[in-house]
Image (cartoon, rainbow, N blue to C red):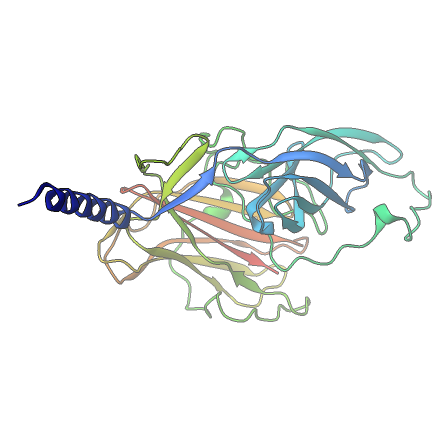
Length: 347
């Protein structure tokens, strides 16, 4: 055999090994640098008003950003990689007073440096700013509301009309969760309700509002080592798709709620893969009127067989007359390191 023929076979064999190795693991590349806030317009605003945050490396979807005003989260109205519009939450400020809060943006597992924002409230009887003012221009209602990150901690509960749906997130991603919330009290499974992924039902007394299911986000905590010639992994986080494809589903009963109703949320894990999902941890976060209660909860079932849909938790509470915003976020981590996240919200 000639030396040129041996060299050609060696090169082909090396290329085949690289292609097989690349196909064995689906990866997602993410830049390690976090979000950066350049300016906030206007730099002075009242609770309930919208501000525009300009900067870089924000999440392109509203639900991918958490905007923190001190320890409270604002409702994100719209977002792209360089701009986020958010509603100022009910910051504790007296009539005629003003406070300065640190504004930060959490995108993924990274948080921006804080930027000062002045939050004020007029004295009673004092006229509000003219509607024609650019800073006071109305903002459109959001189509979706963002889910809180799994490391979320409790925010001080306040009665807030039209308030944000998420509370503060700790700067380090791994934070010991607070005790399980009262809203996450297990009970016997409720009667079957309509799937929350269907069209939102009309809620008594609140036309057009119902429980809406978001899409499951699934990733893996396992790292992938890409030692490929010509590839520089510096400044890049490498993440793998989940080993076992799976989803989280919710059913809320009753589908129509009014003040005083006892409601229940049934949580499912759907295994779309060919191997079992063994649940290691289940983290539940319930946000009502911007106040967050969160903690780890023991699943009712830890093993979900392939192609099965199993109930892993049922939670209940009483619907209050003052409820203006409500959401439940659930994160399931498997023994393999797969992470499944989803949210159901009242819109």
